[in-house]
Length: 168
Image (cartoon, rainbow, N blue to C red; front, top):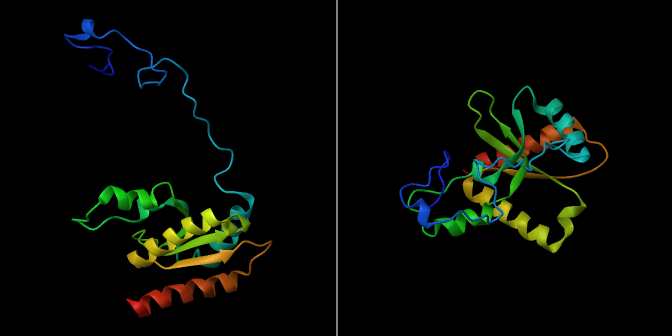
């Protein structure tokens, strides 16, 4: 029998002595180990974010670091649901551009730096590419660099959206 939040172990609680498995519980008095990150975005992501907001703020709301599980869903009746969910579990997109009134995702953006060059990262990127393509959400990959031209970013976003609209 497990402890509930009030500490009441029920009528058979005397048969099951308390065991300390080292796992904190919601009722634990121990200090929780969570700490706030100092920054949500890396320096490179923040530099790009500023330019991106400048380039599209009149048309889109920019959402950074969106988890794929929050962005995508599985169709009703999908077989092997857990296997499909595990493919995108713990993966995020660097930036999602949403229509401001409905917050409907319009374009996904990945800022690709040298960390995307490893074989493991390329496998993760391929999963993101396929998942977003299947869902019909355009993905724009932008190489990380020292500076960005807002007009070129705006044009790349327009091009990405038009490619999806034409193929839909």
